[in-house]
Image 1 (spheres, rainbow, N blue to C red):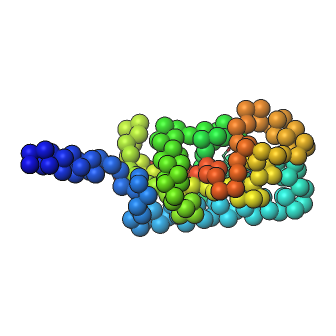
Image 2 (cartoon, rainbow, N blue to C red):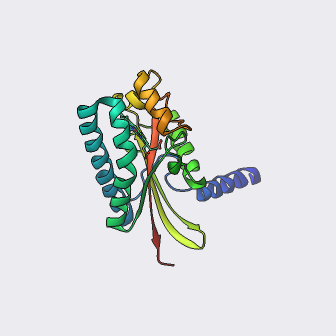
Image 3 (cartoon, rainbow, N blue to C red):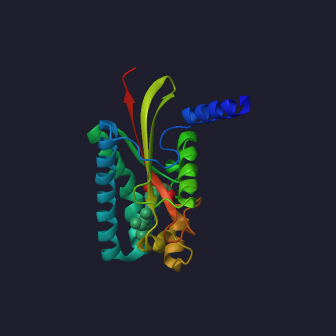
Length: 195
Ligand code: HEC
């Protein structure tokens, strides 16, 4: 009897300490979550549009330079307009400026676990309020799936010109070897909350 009560207590405490959303249950639609989703849509849409046009005009090797020059600016513009911090990150980055911080690493690993448990990637997201450097931050991440078009520059079988261009711009590139359906990375957004 005593043992049962203790076990029940441990289970309750365990549930209390497990952050909401970490096991893949939906996160609630707060105004910050809705805003973060809208910004992801805006950034994702702008990046896709730019990528598509560059691939069509210049092919994959030429489009790398467009990504190199424009992707950081596009993210910064979406951030500046909204007052949020808006970025992309990954456990295997191409641009070292996209390297994940500790919180992002934890969330990216959790996304991998959720994927392994069978959760689809299209709506995989996570958010939390964290204290960081004395600031209260709302943080949000959304998984980015690898599609077929991505393999031209993030897959295993790259064209020679693509590999050469990547080597010259990103000597520390880790973002190859992905397959369709892998988590390529995530959008990562935050905003400072009043204390
Ligand atoms: C034409 C080549 C090319 C294609 C195709 C491409 N990417 Fe990239 N990707 C890049 C380059 C170059 C960067 C680095 C951009 C920078 O310097 O900020 C990058 C960076 C990223 C990043 C940021 C994290 C990191 O590794 O630095 C993500 C996430 C990403 N790509 C996802 C995708 C997805 C998803 C697709 C398919 C929809 C895709 N990419 C297709 C070239 C490409």
